[in-house]
Image (cartoon, rainbow, N blue to C red):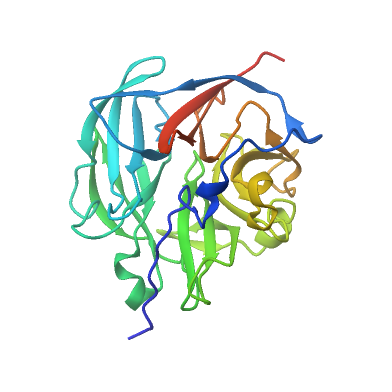
Length: 304
């Protein structure tokens, strides 16, 4: 039996004492101004915190997870679109193996083939794996199972967030270092599809070097349909109020090139995490802390 690690955080919930420092990040020279008009997403019939949004490729479903604030245990939720910024809450995401009693499930991510990926530490103590997948159809999930080939690799290294590319061929995993008992490091790692599972991309370090910055927590990614834009969350706890979680954008000229040109998304302020890009690239969803409660918001791409 491998040593068991208590996973207390889901990306989008790396609170680590930052809640008491909430304020807007300072205006930086490196800001991306391509989005504007922040709007709170309405979830009719849902009360409480809503985190880790993921918009389905067809735009009809919004997946998210409920609050992780103790004593709550996050579970996956589903809502159906009823308007441009409104969704009807349908309840916990149904399907055997999605939400298990007493077990965290979070960070949903859907590809165009209707494969859903999410994380749960339910079997981490015996497998060192947390990334699950299942088939999403008509608001329900079937065939939930662990994803072959994705693992933190050693006790205390935890994959706590997952983001699949729209094509389903690539996965960005957020890896947290809990070996000291609390989160000391977080970075993104890239995997590529291999058969029914995934393998670590040998070029991951090179491709994500500008994204995984020394001294920061980098996690909770979302990639564009052409895989040339990467949105992610960055926090710098050592900088106090100026290092709160914020959403950043990195770009590259083609998929074989490293991501670079990292800039904060200027339209998003305050404590914000967990980006999710619509399939057409026009809308970026995320959650933000509003008066002590996590809410889902969106910003809209501006004409160039």
